[in-house]
Image 1 (cartoon, helix red, strand yellow):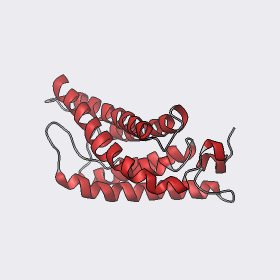
Image 2 (cartoon, one colour; image 1 turned 30 degrees about the vertical axis):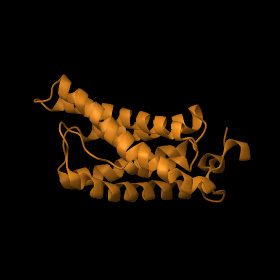
Image 3 (tube, one colour; image 1 turned 180 degrees about the vertical axis):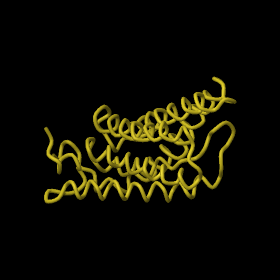
Image 4 (cartoon, rainbow, N blue to C red; image 1 turned 135 degrees about the horizontal axis):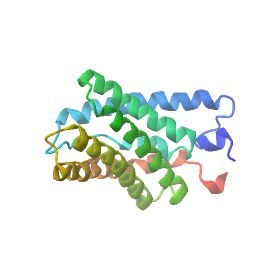
Length: 193
């Protein structure tokens, strides 16, 4: 079993790992909410398709290890989205989307660090980004289908595809692959541990 400092991966957080994980959660919350304020100003495109800067929490997850930090980064991003949802007008499907965010970000970290085991590979980053976005978009499309009487299977499917591409590729993999080299010095690889 990994210690908390090994799970965090980035730096030696040996003295107060819980405090640092909480800091990661709060940073993720504010960074993702700030990014959402910028990207969501574009508005929705088509059928419930919007632009969310998934690369922000993804980048934090790249430089940490899979485990509690991944969960807390995902939770911070989901809380940031939830707070903005309250200001925009709470909708009945928001809790479903919240769960989708947390699971999507956790699965991103799981795939990147546990399955691909290479947070520096553009293929691993792209695959993980698309997986995380697909999971979140699935929850959103499901909620859209269940809670919106005007939504049919086609609209929900378009929402799933569009949000997977916008969150996972356009605002996920593309900026992540471009920004990941900038944080490679902070990566703690399995070989170094």
